[in-house]
Image 1 (tube, rainbow, N blue to C red):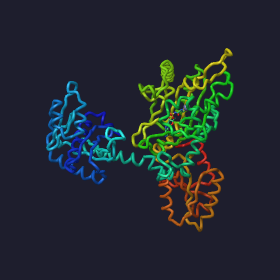
Image 2: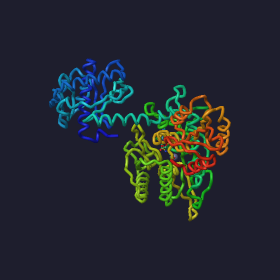
Image 3: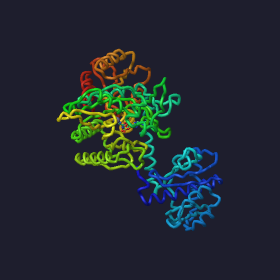
Image 4: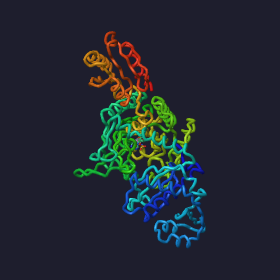
Length: 584
Ligand code: TSB
Ligand code: ZN
């Protein structure tokens, strides 16, 4: 989707459209007060103080109508430059604009305002010459937004909109938005009964329904089998740990804000774990290790709990209870390059299996906010330059981002975009010199001396939760056969005549571990077929007289109109091959 902010012409008309919006709101709500109305990637918004009024979608339609009226009237937009004193005088009865003006320095910036007809707004500009050109716009939504983003402040009404130069572009954009809505995993997850949420359970804590649980079982098996084949050893460790464990690791000092609060039992203190690293450090420490044993790769499908802001949680994409596809690799310094290469290769293989193509690598570095990161400049410089070299040696195309590292070290993150435009990390591979130090980990090197290992933290699917969210959006819910919760639906033409044969096929497929259902409801075949399409079941098979007499099945693949009749054995081997090869 187009990024309005990156296009100069569109930025200007969107900004002018924000003023048009404000003018229309002023006409309809004369006491309205206006905060700021910036251009954003998705168009523009304006934050407006409407007292106790909460706007509805219907109100947006009325405002849009008023905007059209003003635009048609076609007033010119006139710029005026003011001194600070003049500006304070001009906006003296508007506390929001006074707040803005008082922070301005007239020596550094020109203070200007723009007037169109009966409406003047403080603004840097530039704007279009007349409101007449603002024809192709749409108000998209309204939500509450705290003044200056601070939850202690008043809630303002934030109205979002977008404006284009012509009707065609606007319509195309609205179609894209509609498609994104259809592709949103929260919609697919609800329609296909994959997960649900409930206020009684809490925000960011989805419940996986049977269909979702089957997808998840297959994903977990897929990645665990792959990892075991690659020399990972899987463990199970508890979802709780003592506060001391997290004090030792440094999480208590640098990650506490993201954790659920401590629980006190008798005289012990526990936390729900936000990460699994500390447990895995202790698993490593449980044995003596020689350089010959390294790298040691400890994996776990491990449950973690993070305090994500209530406004940030989103379906399965951002949750408060998650299951990481986690592993910690313990290796010597000179094995880091190879191990990183292996992890990157595994990521690429997995993305290939799922057909993911739109992703980018991000080198996530430390930021300036010191307290967020473990304070050891030498360690950070070493880790960051080492990781940068590893990535350069791998010939990987990547971009760098500050203030995105873990508190213990820099990361290589794989970034993807969700249907509604969130930029999120899926896979991650991180370099850590800190935790081995904090847990005093050692191995015996070639010289018989104790040496400190390096730890690589990595999650390939990220979390099963976020991965499933992304998978549902990428596939629009049409999962490949090997992952589909229900793979086949068997539809007898008549229950009376073909029901028994239907059951026979059902058992045969079930015995071959195919997940199938017999639809023996008293409904028309066409109706059942359509329902199988809506449920995105990969194959529906219809059986009537001919099929029954000659031991055949007639199948139809999801999304295809073609009906193909084959023997039962042929059908089964076709399915098995498709599952085996993870055909998409
Ligand atoms: C990889 N200690 C490391 C681990 O060893 C770690 O926890 N890294 S992490 O913080 O980056 O999290 C790993 C992955 O979990 C991320 O790459 C992301 O894909 C996923 N993730 C993080 N937060 C959430 C969340 N709130 N909801 C769903 N998935 C999340
Ligand atoms: Zn970790």
